[in-house]
Length: 403
Image (tube, one colour):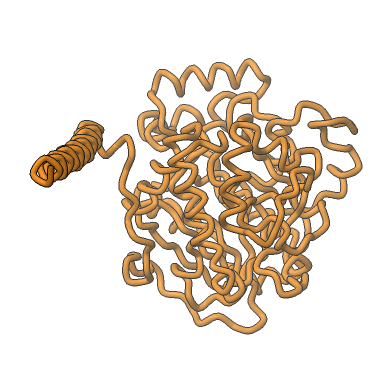
């Protein structure tokens, strides 16, 4: 009887060993299948995120600049567009009571470096300026992460540079950030004087679009990631949202709150599971939501390149707000420097103040087409459309190139 009992015990042990062996083989098989799937997908589809850049990873400044004075107003832009940048500078200087205080810092691409440098040299009233080339490989990798689950038309590597200003220009303790599709009609010193009240960011808040409308693609994923990142703060879906384009930034508070890493975390989570359709604005909104200083809405009257009418309804710009607006923001697809762009008169009054727009028959169409990222055929078609809109063909739509 003992012998039979021993045989049964040994039989059970063999069965258990076989079961464990099958489990181990199954786990190894699953790992092999996953490895095969990863290897079969090229890195361009899901790019590896490089480590966050340090100052040593950025290229050195191209132009030396004087040390910043205590009364200076640092203004930072990320742009590779000649025409739009010229309008921002023209309007800022013309409407400032102390233009000599403005110190301009521009982050641009390698291709636009010469053009942007020569553009800035046309403004002798600028106390100082600095042009910096962004780390293309790094920011393009971030763009690929975001564009994997976003519409690619909203993703531009330069849009990410705004999140590493403290690394690019470490001597700045506070600065004003301006998008390149603006017209500044107020005194920039007035914006500079706003108190941030201990916050890292000061900006305009809008309520015609709220958190609920901003994240309709996958609200469950947004809520899940939010609870994991901010367990002590509930997400208010009816809250108004801060908008980018015009911001006053305190770099020390930005770093103390680790906002850059929070933005990158949102980008990585979006890469795993899509949460929005736009580009860099959603992760910026989620990172500063409820933690920014509100400034009057006239400092960022947005939607001039997509809101159809001037009125008082949803997706309309109140007429009185347009009149008293201190910064007009042409965000949207119908940019004023494009054919049939909306509200061109508001933008064109600051275009061509410091340089001469070349006549249509003297423009190198091939060069301009390359800068605008289109074929010569497309560019000539745009000129024809521009003429149909009632504008002089070849004079306002083309981006003038500095030879």
